[in-house]
Length: 102
Image (cartoon, rainbow, N blue to C red):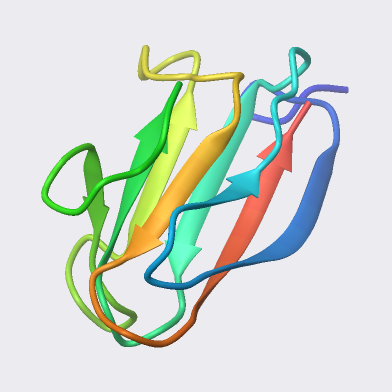
């Protein structure tokens, strides 16, 4: 049975990134939903279809800030099924809480 968000099952994971570009979510052609929340204190940027770059792509603020999560769904028209890259805006490591629905 599909959820109200349009997917049947969800996988929860933790992603990490530093101030060097890295993949936080692998490509998945079956993806129907993706939520990425920055649980660290420093902003980061997401890249879709290529490397993430500071001041380009989708910014996710640090935890406790407005816009510390990014949600992708078919209904919103922003669902991306390829690799999701991230880069931190400062030295250190950020953790992400990730929910992927298929």
